[in-house]
Length: 257
Image 1 (spheres, helix red, strand yellow):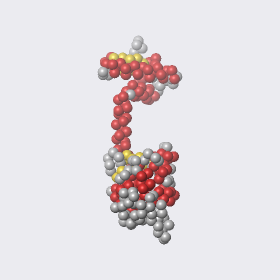
Image 2 (cartoon, rainbow, N blue to C red; image 1 turned 90 degrees about the horizontal axis):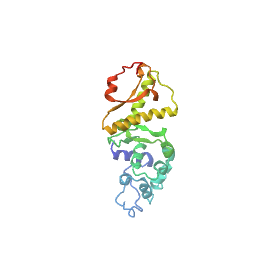
Image 3 (cartoon, rainbow, N blue to C red; image 1 turned 90 degrees about the vertical axis):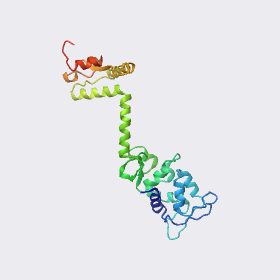
Image 4 (tube, one colour; image 1 turned 45 degrees about the horizontal axis):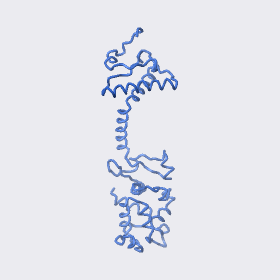
């Protein structure tokens, strides 16, 4: 679906007029829109302005359409039309888009007619390809269904990239969590006090500091008694070893250690 087709659907659905219908020209010259004579032309110009505040204000200047046999026909331009359709939209345009809305105006039009354009791959797709944001604060802000502007596939790829970057930056946390999971699996995870949890984190932080100082993975955090042998993931069972020594140890633990 093209931008033009989206606009046509929007005009028909919410303005209850044909995109080719003429718009009264009173006030258009003053606004520099005297060459736009149809709803499609006016909405297209304002669509590409990326600003619904500008669109609503400008369309509210003398652009009226009064049809006695069509009670849904807007009588106060775009603002009046959208507000009149509040029951359908579930919101007024102010509620929908807020004050800082330059990027939301086109998105609002697309989502109103059941499609959205991914800001990453630039593909226009049905709304079931996008995450509905009603489970967070957006529903309170927008008073309506609001969708993520990145398709599910692209958002997942971006998230994976962020996760990889975070893991690289926070390797000590990743290692500590990994050790904790292995301890839980081996049923050797002791319930630690807050102080002991902080001690564990400090050991992993110190290992990271030493590795950053060395410029490569020179040190490992080692379980003195391996988890596989019943050792606990606790401060008293952790030590910082040279990586080569830890690999050489390779779970060969004896009671003499």
